[in-house]
Length: 383
Image 1 (cartoon, rainbow, N blue to C red):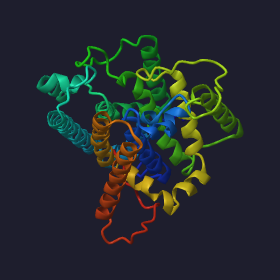
Image 2: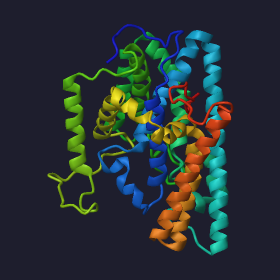
Image 3: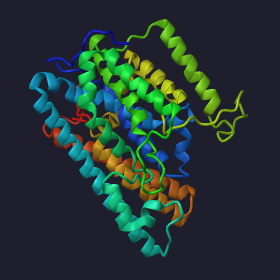
Image 4: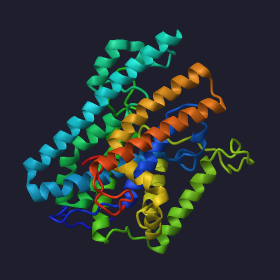
């Protein structure tokens, strides 16, 4: 944990970690897979191996990236420049969210008209039409599979406040954030309202801010410990032990063709309020991954470079993945869930996401050789 002394990003830039880009790229690909119901590949995504899934990984790394991209800016360039950069990024995120809403509504509407389909009762965004679009554009409505960017916009907008608390003391920031998270877990009614169903946001920002803050503080820890989180033996033992318990408790053993190995029956912990089991699961994963030099060497291999470049261009890759996951849903509904549609959906979806990242990377480094060193400064979703 950070000490109680005031902290800042300082004039020296915080580390840009290849592991963060690779993990974020992996999270984006898994989010695409998980957002297509019936997708066979969803049996091997993160959610099957513990209590948390790719959404927690994305938010944690977003906090890390926000500190890397903007924390130092407040110190180096002053509050006005820092606030301006955060504001411009929030505007860009909002523009992408608005375009996604328009594209998805147009895509689904055109598909339904062409194939003579009717929206299912659960397709609230499509059934609500222009009224749903209006409320979605003001972030009052949270369509399914398009609720991550609104959460991110809110969290990034809060970053100047978070950084101000960190400047006072990392412990103050952590405690304030943790108290709010605990309060929401005790009273889940503390949430923003989703106009579509009258319920709260699927990702309650008052709870999920805790993971974002932890990620931001993690960036400071990496700088303090020269790029690797400390991993004493007791921490590794506890982390591996918890992840082993989570695997045994939550893995779909029978679906995988194994015997039922669940020693106890546990319901999936509440995702909306970021229940403690989910939070600890993600922290255990992060502690092991971001403290491992072996993992760094692994993701720097050429064979895994596609994950790194996906993570470097995460906003664009995420947006394309959102549209393609909706297309995958439509394909499954119209033509059935068969091996052909599985291969078609995943092949086109994952292939286009990776191809977009590679093209954007080459546009960013037009004179660089094809094998760009993965240790070069990486663009992050919040930069």
